[in-house]
Image (tube, rainbow, N blue to C red):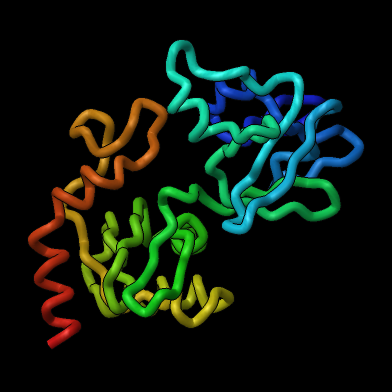
Length: 214
């Protein structure tokens, strides 16, 4: 919860930073952000817009694992959080995870979280996951009570009209079951297990892309 000095993690599993980096203050609260860095912390972006953090709360390294440490923390002590962010007026706005970035076959990149969040603002969609890595266009996996794909496609693209044109969704694949932790498609913290959902719908995904490419 955001509020008076309520900690907001840059990443809910960022134990490498002990684990709080930024918070919203009572007098400067923007719920769309995770707030401003705590005193003593430095933040900056690398060339991929990943958030780098340095400060007293950043770990010294992984126990007996220097290789893993080097992958996370550079020689100057900057920890790569793996979060794609914007920094405006000292506030940090999370846009997605670098490992989730989709790169289309034409080289265009899209953070799936941007599209998914926008689409989920339409109550017709209960759960969604964007796919398109190395593909010519984007396809949306969706859980919805509405079964008319054409109608859903129109509604989904209306929700993302503010995003770049390459974020346009070409097709929707409807899931016959809800994604839950019980069926192994969500983590215990209710995040989508992207690879598990992808593999579950792999045959439909391949068929749809065959239709798209002719």
